[in-house]
Amino acid sequence: MATTIRDVARVASVSIGTVSRALKNQPGLSETTRERVVEVARQLGYDSAQLRTRIRRVTFLLHRQHNNFAVSPFFSHVLNGFEEACRERRLVPSVLTAGPTHDLAQQMRLHSPDAVAVAGFIEPELLALLHSMNRPVILIDLRAPGFRSVNVDNARGAALAMQHLFAAGRKRVAFIGGSQAHHSIAQRALGYRRAYFEAGLLFDPTLELTTQPGKEADQAAADAMTRLIALARDQSTALPDAVFAYNDAAALAAMRVCIAHGLRVPEDIAFVGFDDIPAAAQSTPPLTSVTVDKEALGRRGVELLLDTDQSHDCPDILVPVHLIPRASSAIKQTVTMTTT
Image 1 (cartoon, rainbow, N blue to C red):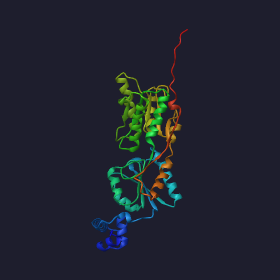
Image 2 (image 1 turned 180 degrees about the horizontal axis):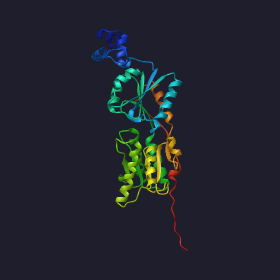
Image 3 (image 1 turned 180 degrees about the vertical axis):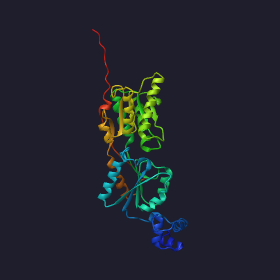
């Protein structure tokens, strides 16, 4: 016969309510009591999945590196969609930012969520901690084994960007990317390389740059573009005739560097970004970008949290993308000289 919550309460000499709070990691208990109950449950082989909690409180967990919405507005739109979906379903949302130096377990107890939506990159050790808390967890703009997730169709977006640039006559397309520990960036880099193969074009690995860690994203992208220009001039090789950047902020920073070096956009070098933030359409020239319904990421995350059908094997829901062509990637003009 399977171990019940009453068995755990009897052996641990506590009430059933105390067992429930301990296994759900809810507040109101001392750490000594919590640890004792968890250990008794483990020894008795109690399946904590039997504790079905009606989801009412949901925490939107964001890494500290993403919480500057002014600099990185992508997640502010995701959060808007998340909060809107919570209101429609009478859920109580909260927002928590955390990093590897923070006591996430303590913060989770203070928020006391019934479920958690993790948005963007987060360290594997923090994911493991969340997994151990025995409550529904979904990932937004992130993918990890054992978790259900909602993601942008990043590879498709990269393919659209590259196909657009190839069709515009660009053949030496550089890629400015960030850390590939980020699922979305890794997928965009993969789509960039795959596009060369599918187009039957020779891929030059020197055109793929990763921004340096530890710097502000704008400055890191500007430095990467500066390195590209310096490399071409030092080696007397051709500059790239286009840049596909992993997000719009990086593309805009790189574009400013090119203009400062006297390069014309798009005549000398074209640019395509990703995410279609408001600044993309307002730049000079306006930036071509891969757009995604960012609010839909947040809404779909809430829907996935409320989906109690766990029979499917950790599905990865993909939100579709579209390319928005603008002046930064106009068709490359060729001039034909004639004699009379």
